[in-house]
Length: 242
Image (cartoon, rainbow, N blue to C red; front, side, top):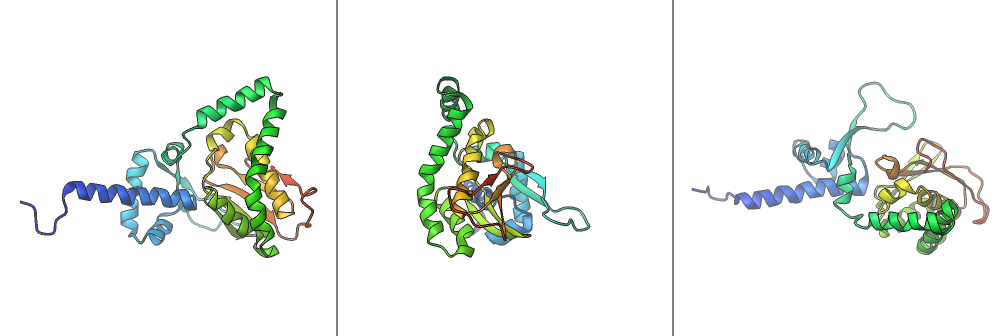
């Protein structure tokens, strides 16, 4: 006999799946996260978060990684963070990757090689950038990175802006074209160029989801010379120069 107030097994299972999905979604929206980060954001105990993470790891939705440290590393073991795997990202979208890769491969072979792919990538980003440009230009100079992050988030990139030593970091926790960009880095390069032009300064791409990082990270240095959109430069130097 079922105890009074006891939920049916299927309801318990549904609740577990719902919470597990919330954990995965939080990692998608905020990037690689510690157990403590997830517990605070979701209002769960750390023990509950660990239980859900264990299931997500078993299902190959998330994986444990060593937390990246910017600046001087402190003593002790590095914190462990949990990031979405390729399979985990696939569960949210990216259903047209194969078609996009085939289309770009056709362009490369029949319409001018890598230069044609780069031209396509620039044209695509230019079309997307109109909304970003309006957001950036209406913001105060010291709020432009944050304004760009919000515009990117509205476009599905789950972006945030944060302060970093001698600059700022624009972090995109989700990339709808990550699998395509893995084969065609011209997509990342065009995006980096448009960020430089929108912000009116040199920027540097430090990491990309397409190359296996948990977050696409672009560094905007403080004190860099402000330039006009036509002369701003973008750098793809760094650990993952795509």
